[in-house]
Length: 312
Image (cartoon, rainbow, N blue to C red; front, side, top):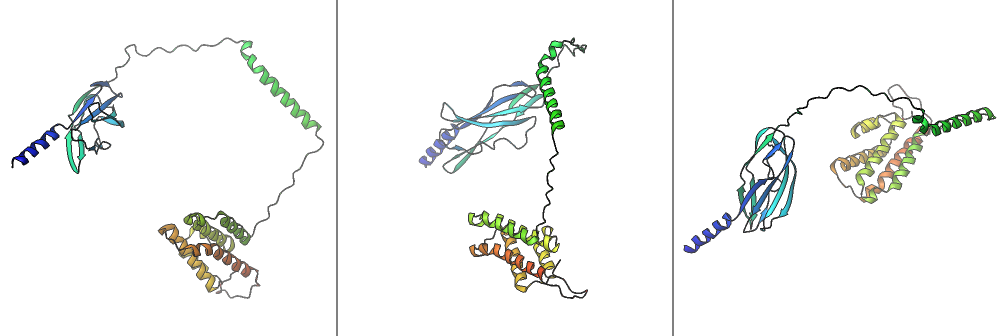
């Protein structure tokens, strides 16, 4: 029994030798100035200060924490942490008691600092008051003041003279030929974009989501250019619904629906369908473009008002 009492007394002595002290470098400041608040933790049993970064409450009255903590080791073997505080209320502003949590061998002890009053003084106005408005001083004219601009004026005059001489002496006006841009067909555009995407080798580098985003963007852009479908603004289901009204083969329609579904899973659910599907994705879009291009070149057959036409 006496051993338990001795052990309890020993623990009490260790705890008593652990303390946290809060000090400030100034007890009286002017509003808007900053002071240093320092907490020194002394613990004879060691341990770690667990709430050093979160010791200040979320909201403080009359002041705010500007920076900190800056931690150093005390000469006595403890820990010292310093914060910069800025005060924006006049009068007495109290720094509240702060809990210092010490963790040692699975045990947690909490020590509280003392609250400290800070006298915040207002800024006194200047007793001299506002000075009167002085008259505007007019500098007397002097030609020497403008001599620094003479080289610039001469250079500008020579440049204007040279331009006038060139304008008068030129024999003929060079007319640049007008460049008429040949509109690119939707399928040529799609083939070119697919070739650029394949050269990037995104999925081989692990950028699978970016690969499918660009691939479905090419498919949607081709649908807009080829069939006037607002694919860039529609969901995958809306695109498939519109494609069902075109004269496409069931296999092409099924492959396109599968590609859009896989792309949605990769972009939104971060799924990974496998390397085989990555390699086939660009070829699926290329085959879709090829089939719809061949259909556009086939002769149109007579249709009724209720029939759908696959060509533009």
